[in-house]
Length: 219
Image (tube, rainbow, N blue to C red):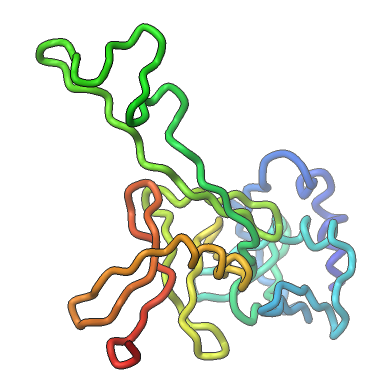
């Protein structure tokens, strides 16, 4: 099957803009495998040839999901085809730190009409600053906020390295691109684990985001 044929069948539902197609609600029959591989470096390769049309790759990524058995597929309401993924289907290529929500009191600051810190009314606690949140951007434009249960975890790459990944959607995850990984390492702090190893990571939404582990033997 040609990748472009999938988009033809979907029509406007696979459009570049607007909400994602509801692929989690589509349960068509399995129609076999497509000779399509998502390489670890983010390239989409069909029948041995990289797909050069960024728009086509982006639209295909919108109808991809991971199955309970760990396989990856492209889905339409009428058919489902399996594809191959070398590592993770997305790469996280950029990040930003989102400060506390507007209107939240920051240390040493007050909003117009507010009392100064230390002058809270009797029985009222002073407003507390909210934790900053880091958000990632994938190579397909997904924005992933590291908050709540959405956190970085370590998993093994095809090269045998343990590197961070982040959940994105429909069971799919993004591996941190090398350049982004090194950027985040500059923000990292170290924490000692129970076994003496040192964990590297940072805080987002008040939760620890793991970037890596240094063995006590190597320190």
